[in-house]
Image (tube, rainbow, N blue to C red; front, side, top):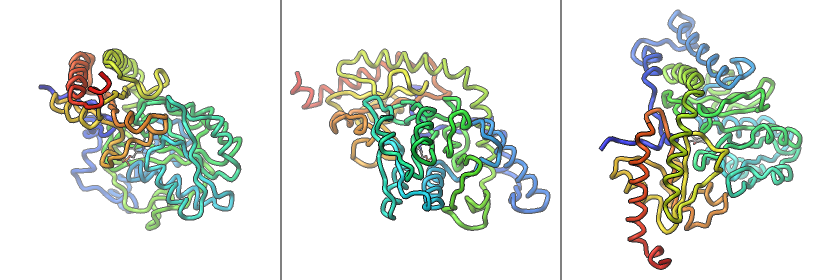
Length: 388
Ligand code: PMP
């Protein structure tokens, strides 16, 4: 049985073109970009070229707005802690939507333990941020408001431009986690007036171990990793040149191929949604139209997402139940609870995220496997028997 991988939001393989591009920095002698000899200068040049490509990817003002980090968890921490700790004179509140990734929520909880006020902004049943609540919650005391561009578990795309206007009217800085959206939605930090934006290399088919924080010119952050002062003093430590160079090339390829890939993903996604929603008591989670082109997420009554995942794995189809980062807890996803699902409803979730390997030919097999799996699990479910 050929493998059908439908969990690209959890892990995306490195693109072979990216590997070819940056392989030299892995296999050969590579200088430290802080060194003044020719190899050091070569490494620095490659890093700066990568920075330029990433600035182009998000239409940043210039390449010095791009701060390289070790990944998106680190970028989110630098944005939230770095901005709050540096700007405490201006206020002592931080805010985030209730469906942010835990790498946004946990740094905010950490600040809360250290004297900041932390407010959660609710979302509606389709995952859209409640703009009226945002207007009430965000004040001139709110140092940083964090709203993701699109959600990794339910695929909903937020109206970032509108959110940006509201945040700047009422509060101070807007941070956007664009990890799930990067590569699938055109990003423009200037048009959307975004102050801080997080990207992940691995979500763009780049190497693991690299991330970016875009920092709008003029915004001051405090380093959360003091040391040798690399990356404008914001992220100390010798650079992972292979990963950073690869991330720039991955962003360049993603930007070039997006227009061609988006309709292809949308077609496969929509056929999957049409077929899977034919199953009784199955529901789409997230927004029906304002959703990522490669993202299809569902819930099924009377059964558990983990059993669905394990059963589909036997068909050699890999799916997720939510965020891989939280899958070791037995708690239902905070995202599904935030959109108003009951605990037992939130337990029956399945998330399919498409990637470059997927084709429309796979769709009938996936629909049949999901339909058979749900039927088999319901036959074993005491809850389903009670309903019948
Ligand atoms: N933000 C979002 C939206 C994510 O989905 C993830 C996980 N893929 C992260 C941040 C954190 O990414 P990482 O674990 O690579 O640091």
